[in-house]
Amino acid sequence: MVNERKYRKKQKKKKKRRRILFWIFVPLLLLLLGSFGYASFLMHKAESVINKSYEEFRDTKAKRPDPKMDNFSILFIGIDDSHSRNFKGDTRSDALLLATFNAKNKSVKMVSIPRDSYVYIPCEGKYDKITHAHAYGGVKGTVEAVEHLFNIKVDYYVKMNFYAFMDIVDALGGIEVEVPYDLKEKDSEDHHNAIVLKKGLQTLNGEEALALARTRKKDNDIERGKRQQEILKAILKKASNVGSITKYDDVLEAIGNNMKTNLTFDEIKSLIRYVTAGTKLNIKSLQLKGTDQNDGVYYYMLDEQSVQEVSQELQHHLQSSSDSSDSGTNTDEESSANINNEEE
Image (cartoon, rainbow, N blue to C red; front, side):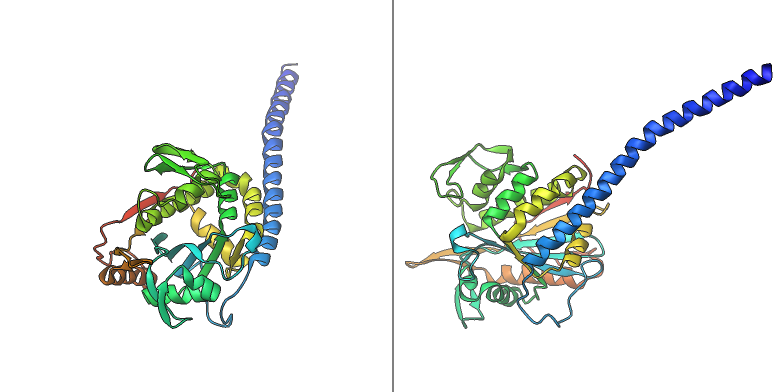
């Protein structure tokens, strides 16, 4: 009798444990399957979007670095492009940002190039504003001008118009950025003073982030470039958080036809793993120095020593297997940021 009671009690405990395991396991299984299903859906959608966005600008037979294991460079080209222009090549670039990636220590160095910088344009064989390089020769003309300026090979490019920029920020639920001063600026449809921002740390939507990225009312191209770098860091930080995974579908929608790149789908997957891996991603901003010149036409005259120092630091970053030592540049305007890949 005693043995029978012990047996029943034991069986009851087993059933209870099985029920607990069931209510723990089933939701986890559903969550896991849902995640795999969503990931699979995103993978197919992303591949379709990237395939449509792929556009090479030079010989595809040339050896390309592997983002998984090699150091590489990417030129980000922002185009102030209306829907009526339909992403044509004769549009001037409004933002240029060159980034180098060091695979060993997961670091990124980036420099913004002021749009009115007076530089040599190889495709035209003359000096002009770097913003005109895209109007003269599209992506190829812009890449060649940047390569000539820094004596660095640009491995990849990503070209986006401002509609994609706004939609990506909105898809991520906004980004947190420090607004340096009170600001009234036009919106993407050129409605004057449509965007009103207050000084301080703000969560910005797409229109507001674009207004902050574009404004030059209270400063110059250099400060504008700094703001654009801070905004890009904020986007990377938000996108790398685990909590943003469910928003990637909207991000892909935002990219749509508003992006061109020579990164393949597999290379972009490697780049995403580079950004979202467990290690901190260290981003360092470099600044170009120069002076304003206006003889009827405004130019930004880059300081030759500043260009040389930035060029050497970027070259060192690309060539070194461990970026433990700095190249010793004396650029005064430098900042760094660590991106932790964890949910805020």
